[in-house]
Length: 437
Ligand code: PMP
Image (cartoon, rainbow, N blue to C red; front, top):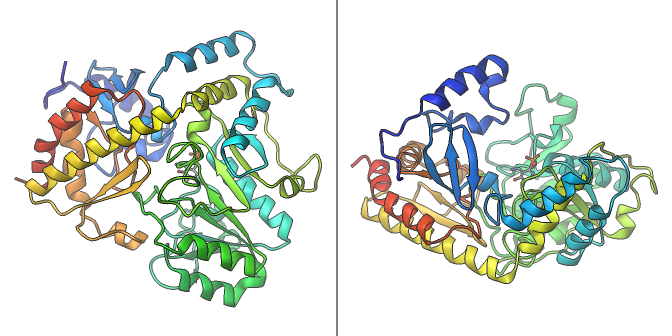
């Protein structure tokens, strides 16, 4: 059944009301509250393949895929079997276990890292990578790029406006000035700004952290030469380069943005992973050369730990998911993403709505502005009102997009013809809504 514009939302609305009483904003992660787009966030009861079913019985094609992890689709039979088997043997041991070794091996086999340490979230991965970079260099400053998101780590929440290198003020209340002042925020894709920051503070900079290909201001690929520049400048100044592949890892290619066709495949000193490698369960990782990773406890002086790190159920899910990510899966993701993005662009053009589609492998986003987006300021200049109207019209026709204009759209191996057809059928009316036609 295809939901109609008058789809019922009473139960979701009632749950949101209840949730608000016991949870701030009624949600456990802010973007889920639909504040940017308006309307009632849908409480999902179950999901299978490319479909979400909410508590009112509406069905949606899922283009969020849990913000990346569900690359094989929801409740994939192989992943479900692996999880069921693992859970039947115990939920958490607090000792080493076999799947951790296998998952680390799978990551090492696919990516440039020699060793990984498993953690439970992307935030933990970037936080730990930062500590390791600071511990290894004995320096304290960190360079990040405006518009890049690396989780809610104090030092990485800072994001300055446009312009040249600047010491950021805290972007979130609760981030002490002492922490924010160690972070230098630069415009993305601006090598001159990077060189200027290093000319001034080079000897104090422990690392540069960047999204391998930014996806958290919408998809903004590095311009030619930028990645090479990052590697050269950090090396010249003895700083480490951290490539955050939490979103792109194992999605843009079998390895990630590293290894993707459009990537310069730069070997960073540290990589962070998450999302796909947990298959929908809490698992993430950071890794690098064996020499650098040996600075971590118990071999080295940089402390890092976790009660649930390498959890046997989460690692079983991640391992089954990575093993399911075959070349055929990547080819399917590419083709489904292309079909949906091309159709969206066609309908928006027909409706006279200015837009640009940008890509990172099968990750893409539709910016509601007609010029290419190279920086966070560019991304912020889009027509977010047009996006909100587009989003709402898609939702009412049974397609669940990410509820923000600054996010990538995600597809899965389970997005079949029926799912794609439902998306294509919804696009013309949504494009007209975006254009206020
Ligand atoms: N880094 C990147 C690039 C991300 O996209 C995210 C999450 N969207 C994170 C880090 C943080 O991961 P988590 O939400 O698992 O803490």
